[in-house]
Image 1 (spheres, rainbow, N blue to C red):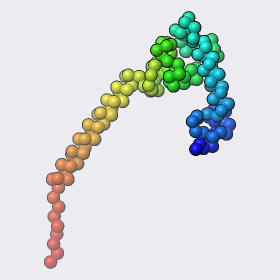
Image 2 (image 1 turned 135 degrees about the vertical axis):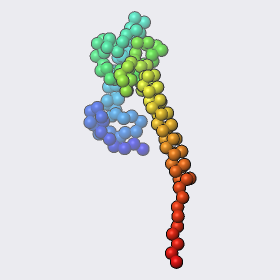
Image 3 (image 1 turned 90 degrees about the horizontal axis):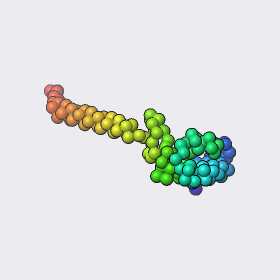
Image 4 (image 1 turned 90 degrees about the vertical axis):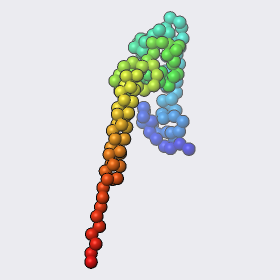
Length: 138
């Protein structure tokens, strides 16, 4: 069951569940999607870039990025559609990060894992070689 929430776009109160925006904003997004898709359908417009689509349709750039990220507009059909990497801003066609940022993060994580493994081994060695004396009272 959904919960009451304010729409992040128009601040209207709605029951959140399947969607993160209210019904009116959803309808507005669907109209924008139809406008963009109808613009891209003719063969002559399939090579259009996002700035060209924004200029021709008047649909906000962020909304077009959302359609591409959701794979409602596919790069296989419209090859010049891309959106910025979440980390560096390089244009990408899928995922959230470009290959370079992905490789950087993966490398940093593996380095951290190596450091953690070394620290764990050193701690185990310290504990294994530590001797304690017990003082007896007579």
